[in-house]
Amino acid sequence: MRIEAERLGLECEAWELLDQSVGGFRLQRHPSEKRIEHHQLVGLRPEDGEYFLFGQVSWLMFQDSGVLQAGIHIMPGLPRVVSARLQDNSAEGAAASSAAPYLQAFIINANEKLQITASLILPAGWFRPQGAVELFDNGQIRELRLTQLINRGPNFEQVSFTDAASA
Figure 1 (tube, one colour):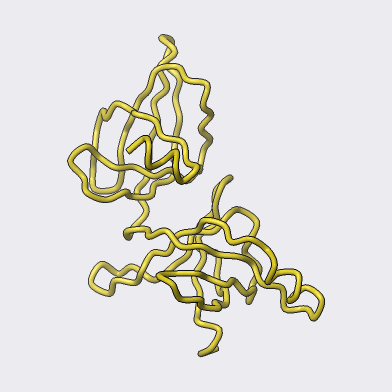
Figure 2 (tube, rainbow, N blue to C red; figure 1 turned 120 degrees about the vertical axis):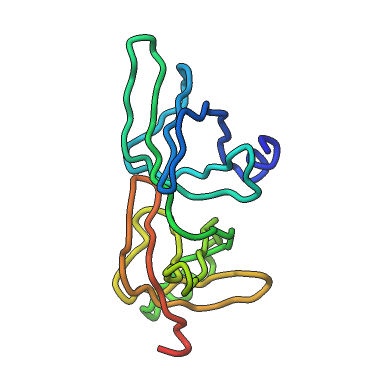
């Protein structure tokens, strides 16, 4: 798992599981140089889990021993890696944005039974009402219109979207 994370340019740490519930996890780790912030997006894969889940740091607590404990609220849905780049609708910006590199993003598909609406997890600062994002997903390019900011943290924005072709 660590090798795969490094290949994707992600950091990977092992945390000790203290408690688990339907809504989240309570974890701890010993002192580390890696920083973690309130509301930060984190990916978790429990030892008995097949998939990574996304969570958001809801609380942090340092103990006198130097151990860091964190409460992680699990976000609904299974994230899938996609590539995305912002599109600029202005005449000169459109040409510039098509040369912009794709960056890693995630899509969470809708699931009516679980009452999950489709959303994108994008880098922080990308959301603009009715902004456009070009998504590269499973060999296909889609243009999406951003409709609503659902959630945000220091390293992400979760947004709802519509297909630009149908808008």
